[in-house]
Length: 246
Image (cartoon, rainbow, N blue to C red):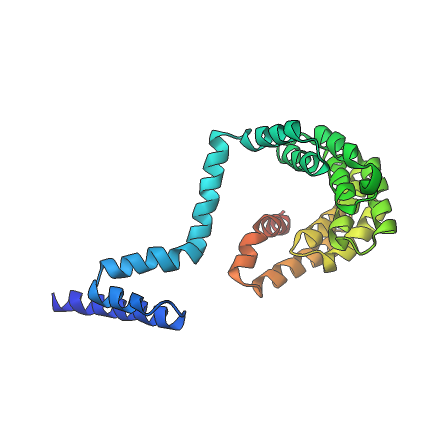
């Protein structure tokens, strides 16, 4: 019993220190010390857990479960919104919902319907339409739109537009042009996707030594980054490791 009491006291002190260090209300000290077990449990689930990585994972799991039970709910809601008000904002919202449901041709139609009047050159609509064209395999249309975006709004989402253009050029088998885009993206695109796509295309073009060098740079870079970065970039880092083992 004395040992258990000592362990509980140490745990209480740890929670009390955390409460003081993180600026929680002082009454938490009373709760933690007055109710040795329940006080610590309450403090954890009310103050610590909601901001923890586990909580974020739990929230993501809940959203995934809800989507699995009713995958079309978002789409139905956006359709209802559009039926009640055919505004550009509602059409864009429905287009985005179509993209998430892989209804790329429908998304493209909705985005095109927005490109009138003051919205004719809207960069967000152009970008959405270009992305819909890319995902629908209409590579030449996506290339044309990204070119217009660069010419009209060169500062707009520079890295994202570059990625759209590079993927569209690659899809259209304009590999030299795509490679030039990916080479820039390897340095400016957030995360590891730009480097991986650059390495992958180098390998496709039988430039294996250069591809290996880029992959090694990816993996070296990831080792210096915090764990949450490696988790977020897991898809691309996994591909990089697989390519090294091939």
